[in-house]
Length: 282
Image (cartoon, rainbow, N blue to C red):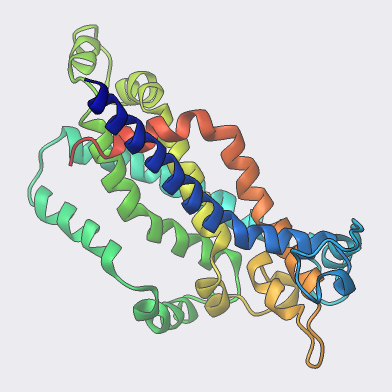
């Protein structure tokens, strides 16, 4: 019995050690970026981990926020203009589609669902040129509308798959009882289903928001006008031809990642429940 307890203790200690090593490896690059953003360049030129002299400054953040050519202040606003509708639209459409796939029968249902899920396997580079040609023919190049429509369509496959699996965990007896009371399908969906799947909706909102917010590839294809550039497009443009302001670049990166980090902080209590519920059944 004592040997078994000792083995369990050793396994627990080893698990914690491995977890701490992985966590340290993940946070180490961020610590480097953070230190470079709050310290003068002369203090980190020999390594950010050196603390012979340590002076905190916000000049890098001020320079990034009010950059003369690509200010992050405007980039954050532009990114919010694209990211907010690109997160809400596919969430609404995906919830309706997933509910239909989960609860109703119609011709070619399984084939259509398989086709939708297959779109998740398409690599971004494979659709870059067709995307530009299509948006150019529609007159949506260099417009936020084109980028919002693309991100909304691009997010639908994984949202439908995620929510369809989540709907499978919701007891159908709830809907049957509502139908007996005379509720319509819309009333059931809005009044019963949506409140039950709230954790999943918040999880999807956080993930979709983060993916759209961090996008650089598709924004680079569709957005060109300097004033319309998103936050992710502005950071590389802060690099000069003969000089790289690392402090400003790091500060701009911190500013950019702070927005989804704040969103996760508000939605964290729903996030784990939503993720777990979405992968229970498939």
